[in-house]
Image (cartoon, rainbow, N blue to C red):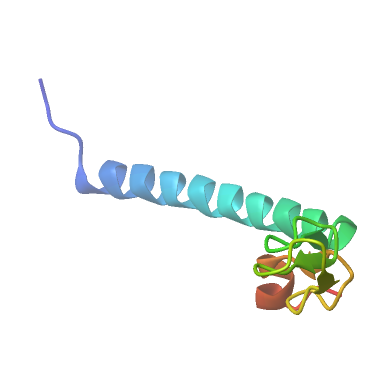
Length: 84
């Protein structure tokens, strides 16, 4: 049994790296399209209601300071990739 030549090994490595790069690029484009279509997510602190209940007085509430009362926040990828 003969061992493969160095050129065969390098060609195989180059092929797999190319496939990996194309796959990574495809996933990045799909994620960017997802961010463009759905840039907002529910606020984690108020659970999307826009209201924060008082801890001391249960019947009082105010606007959530994290989402400014909208109940929605920008997803992390929108801020990271500057998608608008």
